[in-house]
Length: 86
Image 1 (cartoon, rainbow, N blue to C red):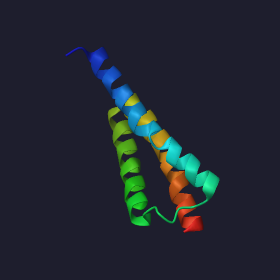
Image 2: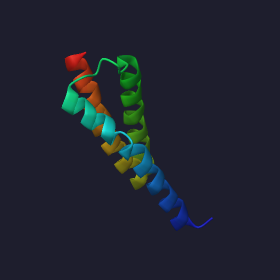
Image 3: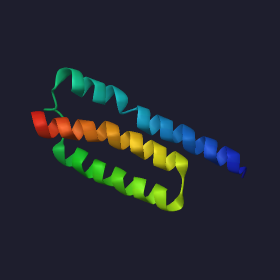
Image 4: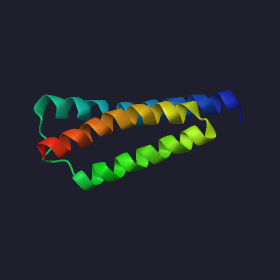
């Protein structure tokens, strides 16, 4: 398979799975309401993102690295606000 096509697929997948968290993050910031969000779920998810980021760095995959940096920023914000507002 064409390596460029593989990278394009990775980039598109990264954009989809990263940008899907933007509306939730905006909502949590605006409303300061995290009561319906699971602390356990977001905690485990953020740990997973950190591990995916470490993996991406180890294999030097820029789509993986960039997607996980942004996903970590979005979900880290949600987690921090969940810890602050319950």
